[in-house]
Length: 490
View: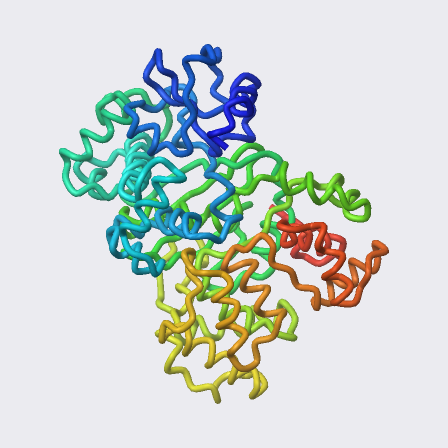
């Protein structure tokens, strides 16, 4: 979008928050870059330059605006919508892959050479993977500086910097303030006293309807791994450097996020996973605008706009849970998953609530005895087949996975049908166009609205909803009075 000067100018002059994260505005006369909705008086058009990423603006010599804090804007919705190399790379960078494994590790995950990755990212985003990861480190550092009382040396390494010098130089370059000055400018308020515990605000594009989002997560919560407590969805997180516990609560203009981490190096990745879980980088104006063009779906959208797709913090976990949920009730699926957790999950300590375990990894489940599973033999075979494929690495469902390839690999496994493939694509792979035409609840909702209800006819009808069919599914499911469609009571 940054190449469409007229459109960018209109967005900046109208302070349109819908475009925050889509592009960044750099001002030649001040040397700063802003989000489109920056509250200051817009500069003259001839003094504006537009960049596709914060990293590109930083590389061009601009520093972040202290007023609108462009690094805190929602991410571009493109990276969830698209399935190409650049989008896959951006999802992996957001998950911290470059900080942990370097550019060679990123390239290996994507199946391309480092040079190809560098070239494609520079061509589209104006910055290579190292610069993009550096911009993310700067944002993580700012969060820790402003919300904790940790010493600066600890913050430097927790944010992913290789040295204190690199940390100081980057903070000064990006924010035009030293780390100490940045902390001094932070809004007054209680700072986290306990190391590893953080309170954050996760932004999103308006509108956001929390009912089906948090309702689904709470109604399907696995005992010991997830719970709804004091108006917040809480769960354990299995992270690269340790584990964490997060509490997420909906607010009118943000998501309240409380994170307890055993290792602060996991902060950026944990935030990325929470945003992905709640689909916070979605563009509801674009989604709802398209779905409203279907006169049968429009009343549902108008009644409760801004529905998101509840996703997952761990794609492998969701694949296992999808198999456990085949042809059984929500309560039965929770019971099966809870048994696996108690038998094979890693215990964790949760002084603030009732969380007890991490969901078991495929490696931990690889040795389970299928005869101990209280389910039909065919589903036991399906479960052990999925677990074996995940543990062996022949099935990849992480954020950088090729969605078409993952679908094909899933479909090859015994007992995995179209419903399971599309559920995994929707919630684990994050495909916004995933569609489940064989789902009974979806077909019943479609029939009630006068739409065709057979799978083949429903697929043809759904062509008008592309590429947002996963969101159409949420609106159709919401016609039922199932608990997944209601925000839990406080």
